[in-house]
Image (cartoon, rainbow, N blue to C red; front, side, top):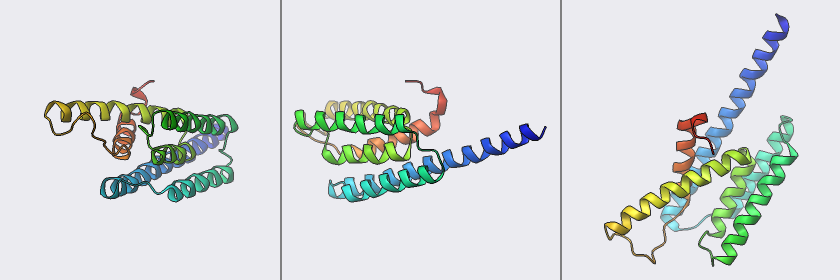
Amino acid sequence: MKWETENLAADVQEDKIRVLFKVWSSGFLLGCAIVDLKTKKVYQNICIINYIIAIVIKLHLSQLQIQPFIAGLCLCMVLLLISVISKQAIGYGDVFIMLALTGILHVKDVVKIFFLALFICCVFSMFMLLTKRLSIKSTVPFVPFLLAGDIAWIILGEMYVL
């Protein structure tokens, strides 16, 4: 009975930490989305600071795992390569946002958020093109779609499987 109580307490503590990181990711993306919409900029220093703080907190909580950490860095390197090859179709700022997210959340969740954001951006862009509010050469800030993807991921929870 004592063992079950200890496990339950550990699970509750882990759930609280997971919720804290989800709230952190949403708050971070909200702030970055507002700045991106107003200035069309992403402040890379803020992204790096969030990434470092997340790593330090995970180290302190003994939750930093090497494999997801390396996978997050690899994901960002691939996105950076795509950004260079595509002449910044994905901006460098978006890559820094993704880096910060891989520090805050698990990389598999960041990939889910990224694909949800791409889907939402695609639907929005198609609508805007069909209504002639955007042209084919228009650009849209991507961070608000990352925020929308993050919110969708939180609402859908485990129902959304990649």
